[in-house]
Length: 204
Image (cartoon, rainbow, N blue to C red):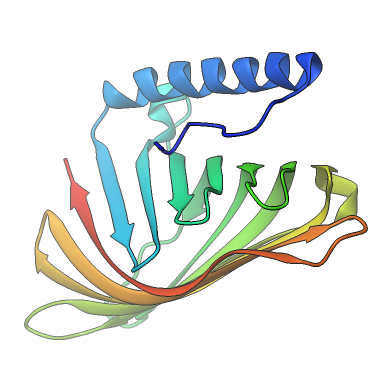
């Protein structure tokens, strides 16, 4: 099963919405591939995620980041996300940098067989460690309350913490932990991700 295989039947309205989402994602990805950007990929024992990020100049506005990603785990859950963010730049006397963003989540759960969509606000904080080989500790969080969570969901919380090492100017390796929990109406909360992972970030 690939990241975008949906293993359960979906209603006609759901199929139509999914097609529109995927068509929009494909157009966004085609636009971003024409620009320089970053490819971020991580693996855990039971999950994987890939995200592509590029400057928002790809959509006519500079100064931010446009990202699109796909997630899959061994339980058959799949997720697509699309987001916009802005981040500060660290200086020699200020090792901290911060960012804010908005991200849309489209989750296709296997057990229970439910679809959830959410619009989340997020924040990022990074502490840059001055060293011969640049390092950093980075944390991020995204949260969607009930008012911006749709389908069978009533909330979404996605957070993680990574330790990063810049192996070379165009490649960063990292080790970290991520937890994403989706609140489901009338059902127990569903942990889409709750694991340690290793990853790489490549700059083009």
